[in-house]
Image (tube, rainbow, N blue to C red; front, side):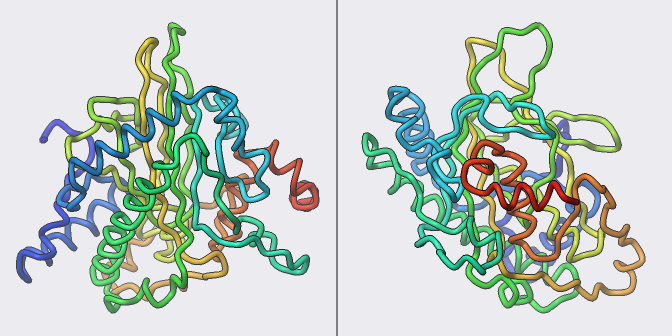
Length: 338
């Protein structure tokens, strides 16, 4: 794996004794300080579960268009459900992909005085023609939640905090699973599957269909390929972890280039984030780490909010303007005033 552009970390080191666990934590700290992205093996996710997920994804996207559009996200005030090809934007440009967004299954909050980000809370939209999708996604969610918690505890120790630091400040996690299909394009130049962006939360675990490339990560001002590694997830940190470490850990730009027709690509990012009303306090880093903190990136077009819900709402409103305009014109107007 020496020719890969990202580091490779083995999560199973955490259960191989104190020395191995310390080695993993040091590799984790270095990878996310230097790069912000890495491959993660040793997660315990079985090939059988991966195969179930991939088949469920393919079955969903093969449904008749009318079935998919029956759960289209423009019918959901909570930005859940199906997004047709071209229905999402990054940096104002159309992304060439279709997807289904699945979050925590909760009742909507009707309080008009509640913070705007509470509008992200609500029920999912499931395809009636594919009842097995919910079971697969539930199994996937439960397993990856365990992986995410292990990573956060390892990060806490690596950054000089106590092991339960993130657990104490997370509250009830606000997760999001996107099942994404990138259809092939026959254009002669690379096309935007999803445009350059940083994730708005804390932690992302990305599963990619075996053998399918297209993911690129920005390193030292250059775009480098991050090809899939068998049995591994691609992991990256989000803007909220950059904020909590005052830039010692840095959220990194990444994008996906569309495959060439007739090829296609399935990917499933899992976003593990704190409760919408949670504020991750700034971590008091050891002196030697604090000296290397670069500060939170100052981008007037992309402010990083301390409260996760504000960051999540910012991301959803700009990615899905049709949903925002239909259900949340007051929030759109409020942001336009600044």
